[in-house]
Each structure stands twice: as C-alpha cells, then as structure tokens.
Image 1 (cartoon, helix red, strand yellow):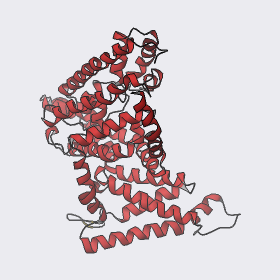
Image 2: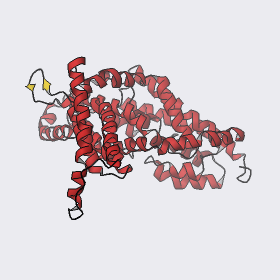
Image 3: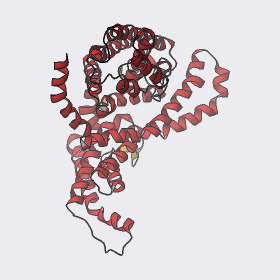
Image 4: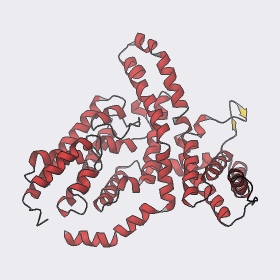
Length: 429
C-alpha cells in the first residue's frame, strides 16, 4: 500500500498540482465563485417560495398562499435579477479574473468579455420582432457560451494589451483615463471578431452563435455527464485529489460547475417556470453531491468523525474528532482531513476512495427511479447534512431520509477502518 502511495505521490501529484494552478482553469473557478452572491440570492428566493407557495398549494392552503402574494412577488423579482442573468454576471467575472491573472486592466477585460457575449446573442424574437433580448439568453442555458466567449475574447484582449497594441496617453493624463484609452484597440478587435462570428452563424448556419453552442456542445455534454459512470468518475477523482492534499472540489470546480451547476440552475429555472419536480430536465446536479455524498465535506467526513467518537480507542484520533465535530456539522472537513490525517494515510485510503462513490450510487438510483426528486435548489454549502437534502429538493422528506440512510451507511463503513486503526500504534503509522 505504501508503495502505491509513494508511486502516486511521485507521478500523480505533480500533474494534479499543475491542473489545479492552471491560469485559465483558476479563472473559470474564481468566476463561478464570484457569482455566488447572486446565485445564493436567487436560490433563497426559490427556497422561500417553496415554503410559502408550492408546499401550501399542495396542502390546499389557498388562503395562506393568497396572503403571501407580496412575499411571492418579491421573491420573483429577486429571482429575475439573479438566476435569470447568471451568464452575464459570469462572463464579466471571467473576463475580470483572467485579465487580472495577466496583470492587465481587469475591468476592461470583464467589459470586453460581456460585450463579445452580447454581440453573439439573438437580437430578435418571434413574438417581439427585432431589438429584444429573451431572458432565456442570459440564464444557465447560456453559461457554456459565456465561458467559451469570455475565455477567447479576454485572451484576444490580453494578447493585444501585452503586445502594446494600444493608444498611449501622455503621463499627465489621469491613470483611469489612460487605462480606458489603452483598452480601446484590443477591446474593439476582440468584440469585432465575435461580431463577425455572430454574422457568419446567423447568415450561414441559420441560428445565433449562443443557440448553436447550446444545441451542439452544452446540451450533449450535460446529457453525457448525467450518466452514473461520469458521476462516479468525477467523485473518485475528487477523492483522489484530496488524498494527496489537493482540494479536489476546488481543482475540479470548472468541471463541477460547468456541467452540474449548470444542470442545477436549469432545473431551478424549469421549476420556477412551472415544471413539476418529477419532470425536471436533469437527474443529477451540483447540489446532489453535497446533499447525499459530501456530507461534512468530501469523503462524508462527518460520518468519519462520528465513527471515531464511537469506535476509536486511540486518544489522538478521538481528540481530532472532538475538535473537528463542530466544524464538520457545517461541512468543513479540513480539520479532520489534515488533522487525523487522511492525507497520505494508507490506513484510510480504501474507505476514502470507495465510500463516497457508494453513497453517490445509492442517491443516484433513488433519483433515477423517481423515489426522490432531483436537486433543484442551490443551498449554501454550510447547511448541515440531511437538512441540506431536505431544502435542496424543495422540502422533500424522503430525500432527507435518503441522506440519513447514506450517513448511517457511511458511519458503518468508516467504523470498520477505524477499528483497524485501533490496532496500529501512532509510532507504527
């Protein structure tokens, strides 16, 4: 076992570290993190409406729903100004973060990325004629095109800025004015390139570039990663990164958010548009991992903490568990991951790699067979386990029960290896 760990440390960790620090992937990750304030606001609006409109409607509490009309209306406005315009917020954040990583004017990069994205957007609607944007152009369905356009447009802008293809102003000009003039040529070229792309697609393909990206790239890709094998591979790789001390969920955030967060937001949009929870478009979303598998953090470490408190006979491990428990309840797993440690600990390698995929499989099958609804509400990651699943599925008791079942299974599986660890002295370890 130690030989395997040493081999992986020599050959896998350097590659994983490079992936985790790759400039463009970091910019994508940071862009998704940057829009969290508005995604959370939209999620809270959806969640409140579940409890003041949807569940009361199921229970025939029509008078209560009528009384809550102002609250429902306010939540609708908040959702309209957050979830509906996610692609706009994301493309600005992406252009900003990527430009900043190259030490060029980040605000200019964000605005150029936004303009290039809007240039490729459909300018007319069947029911409204020319000059109208449709709200569907800016939500989760446009995240892929926002990601692609934001990356390419910003890199064009950055390249030209670095090559000093700019308008230089005298030193006496205020810095803000000088920066604005410097960005004119690079920004104009980047925007014009996408203006040409938009014209070519509308003329020869017969659809807007954003619509083409959704039809040809985004839709098929998200459908591909909806399968259980893809979900399990991602889960396993996240655990593997964590074992070597790399924050797996952060390293793979571009994939997690690009694929499964998009699916979650699409589910939320469909739900807010009136789609029944059993008819939502996507089975597995970003929140599904947190609701049913990453309870207490990656590896379901809250189950490990509980298993240590109950079954461990080692004072060092019990001490770590006692310190980690309060934070583990809120899905912070660094104390136990690095304090036990799990990182590079061959004793816990097997459960660390296999328990989470088992939990994912259980929850996936429950969802696939329609016993529980897909996750369609984005819940703050610090919400405690089980309650997280209840909220993320719109107040579904059975989903909370599945999360509790998974927690019990994880405690049982972790306890087997905790008992093995009892036979090993810290000095031997």
